[in-house]
Length: 172
Image (tube, rainbow, N blue to C red):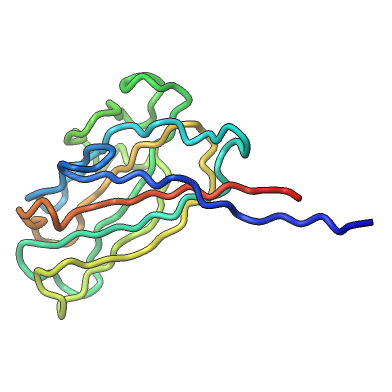
């Protein structure tokens, strides 16, 4: 009898950025202590494999003035089962790119993904990290960014990007 196994299949990546991405997330000049939400994603459900097993998130950003070592840009995820932007969202999310009023309080209702830890040695250059997010449980996601670097983020739009790639479980 053949032995069953499974493997992860890479899905289509979605990019959130100021302009030119699949979805919008404007991080230019985001003040320290501020929270910003990105657009709600397209459906992550694959016709053959269903919901993703995990999401790989590549985060890239920069600060306007070199940040202290270990300060962070924190990433959270809101999930929804409804494709309509402002419907069935946690934490007061609108499902559209914009500032999140009372964001430092509302992020407790979202799922914590991880952080892009700042390096003072990198200065104002782009800093990057890769994170994984297990799940999601819902069909749609909204990335939320909390700037906790002690500095405003860079005014250069091309230095800010989130790329989310779903991975699906294939059973054989």
